[in-house]
Length: 192
Image 1 (cartoon, rainbow, N blue to C red):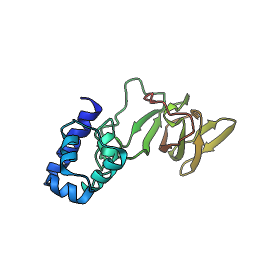
Image 2 (cartoon, rainbow, N blue to C red):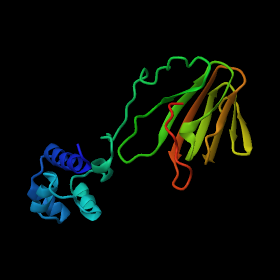
Image 3 (spheres, rainbow, N blue to C red):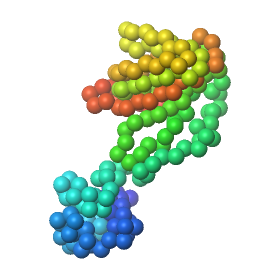
C-alpha cells in the first residue's frame, strides 16, 4: 500500500470508527466534504495544514495518519514479550519495554547480563538517555567520560556515539530510557 493509500484508509477508518459524516468533519475542519472525500479515496493528498485540521476534527494526532507503522495511543507489553534471545547468557541484552506509541519517540529498555561483558549499546546512539541500575554494578564509557553506577544509582546524559557498557561481574540489571535528539548521530536499531 502506498503512503497516499495508507493515509486515505486511516482517515476513512478513523471517521467511520468515530461515526462521523463527511459534513461533520467539514464543519469541524473547515475543509469541504468533497475535498475530504477525495483524500479518503486516495485521489489527492492533503497539505500539512489540511491534514492537521482534519486530524484535529477527528480527535487524532496528525502523526497517526503518516507513521510508517500504525501505532496505538497506548503500548502494553506482556512480561514474556521481551524474553531472552538465544545466546544472550553473557552479553547484555536489551528487552524493549514498549512497542512505541503514536507520535512518541521515547524508548524504554531493560538491560541484563549474567556475567562479565563489554559491549557498545547501539540503540542509545544519538539519544538523550537516562539509566538506572536496578542490580549489580556497571561502568559506562560515553566519549571521553567514564561513569560507574551501583544499585539504585542513575545517570542522565546525551549520547552522540554509542556508549560502551562494561560489567565486571554479574548479574546486572539496568533500566534504560532514551529519546532521540535532533542533531545528534542517528540511533541504529541493532537489537543490542
